[in-house]
Every structure is written in structure tokens, then in C-alpha cells.
Length: 291
Image (cartoon, rainbow, N blue to C red; front, side):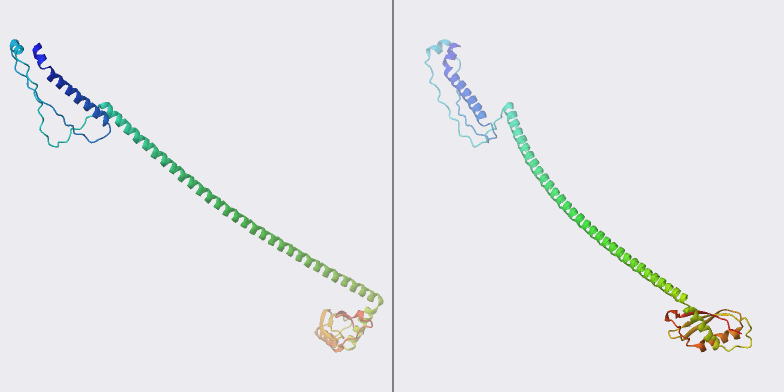
């Protein structure tokens, strides 16, 4: 056995070194291509050695060492896709975690952008709403002022009309009072003048003159009796022309009444008084003929 190991030490060491190099190459490739990289085809060259058959120990000592076999070149292989590199579970989980973190970061960034856009839209809507409210308030204030101005103008116009009507009413009442006072003054003056004329005896003299004139124009009917007395209401125009005659109380019959009325019309125009102040358009005469 010691001779066997001594004879085959180099081939075994070379094979072990080749396997170590292959494992190191695979680990380096795995560390280098952590991201998703297309698989890389690796070409591995090797040689096959045949172990000589066991010989007796004496024969092996006497025989010279066999020359090292030449490496057998592997025939060229067609282009075959390389097998995918299988990453370790820890590395895959780390990459998945990193990808998830990047996706979460992108989602958070997009959410932040969306929130900013929403805030800007909300601020714009708030500004538009405030502007609309300001315009509506301005329009309402303008309308309120216009309404107040119109109401104030109407109130002023109504007050002016009321004052004008009150003034006109006061003027009319003053005119009526003045006219009444004037009429009263004229009436008092006329009454005073009539009283003065009556005191002077002109009115009695005028009434007696009228009674005598009517009596002279009266044609006494046969039915007239003694004690005849009738009240006459005579209306005369200026100058003494008789316009109307009405009989009041009278104790005569129809013939007597007609004769008295005719006597007044025959006496027209009636005589004028001695004093013009005693003239009256409406006369009340008591007709009492003498026997």
C-alpha cells in the first residue's frame, strides 16, 4: 500500500487540486453575479487516468516508475446552454428583501407625490371656493346696498309726499278758516249794518211801503172776510222786479190767495227803499189789508 500511494500521489493531488479550483471558480461566479445575470457557460478540461493493476511489492520495487500519462483532451462540445447558477437561500432572500424595499420605497414616493398633488388640488379648490364666496358676498353686499338705497329713496319720496300733502291740507284748512272768518266777518258786518239800519227805522219804513204798494194793487174778491192775514215770501231782482211769490200761512180761501199773489206781480217793480242798505232780495211781508 505505501508503494501504491507513492506511485499515484501526483495524479491524486492533481485531481484534488482541480476539484478545489472548480469549487473556487463556482463560488466566485456566484458572488460576482448576484443580480439576475444570464448564465455563463463554463468549459472544464480534465483528463482520465487509469490506475495500473496491483503488482506484488517486490516487482513494483524492481520496475522503474512508469511515465506520467498525457492528459487526454476532451473533444469539443457543441454549444450547450450552461446550467443556471443556483444561488444560496440567504442570498435569494436578501435580494428579494432588497427588491421589496425598493418597491416599498417607490410606492412610498409615489404615495407622497399623489398626496402632494391631492393637497395642491385641495388648496386650489379652497382658493376657488374662497374666491367664489368673496364674489357672492360682494354681489350680496351690492344688492343689499342697492335695496337699502331704493328703500331709503322710497321712504324719502313718501315723506316728501306726506309733508307736501300735510302742507297742502294745512293750506286748505287755513283757506277754509280764512274764508269762514271772512264770511263771519261779513255776516257780522251785515248784521251790524242791518241792526243799524233797523235802529234808524228805514227797514220798517221800507216794509210798510211794500205792504201799501201791494195793497193798492190788490183786487179784493167777494170771499175776502174781515181779519184777513197772509204771509208772503217775495223774491225780487235789483231794481224791484218781482221774480217769485209764495204764500205761507193764510186764513183766506183759494180766491183770496190768488188775488194776493196777483197783486204782488201787479206791484212789480216794487219801490226802492229810501236808504239802499235796507234793500233785500228776499222779503217776508205780512199782508193785512185795512177795512
